[in-house]
Amino acid sequence: MEHQNHDKVFFVNFSVVLGILAGIAIVIAAVARLLIPTPEGPNAEQIAALESRVKPVTQVFTDPDALLKATAKPARAAMSGEEIVTKVCTACHGSGVLNAPKIGDAAVWSERSKSQGGLDGLTKKAISGINSMPARGGDPDLSDDEVHAAVEFMLKKSGG
Image 1: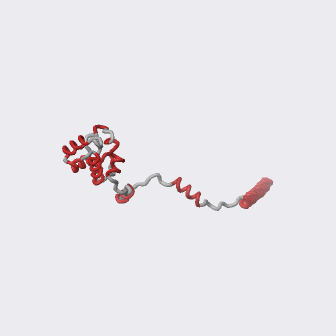
Image 2: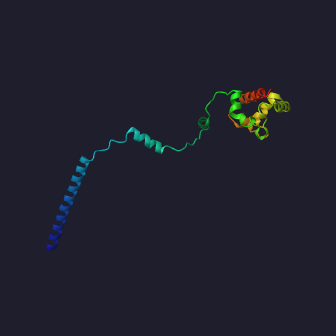
Image 3: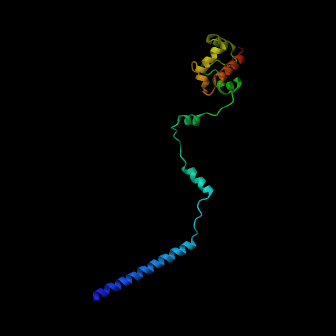
């Protein structure tokens, strides 16, 4: 009988100790809740910083129309023949690099014009490329009309 009484005393004491520990835990949680303010959440600046860090690095386009819109170059105003010659052509035609006819060398330009079929022939060769010269003088954004204006400008500067 003493054995049963011993078990009963143990369970009562154990229950009291657990109750006291649970009470202490509840008191600690309540005090912590009162002392530590609840966060208000992130502000707009923090949200913007977070979104910039987690945004995708790139996009995958499965719609061909969307791909064309995404890769389309912005429209630019047409350049004059002089602007094109200054921007593109003088790199080679200013100094005669790779046997390019120098701007102002009337004899070479006259011979080249005769052998290529005049202004239109020279323009066709400038569009497609000739010898060491790449197509459109190396600027693929130039229109046919702009290339024509540049060739015409160089011919006029060379006395043609």
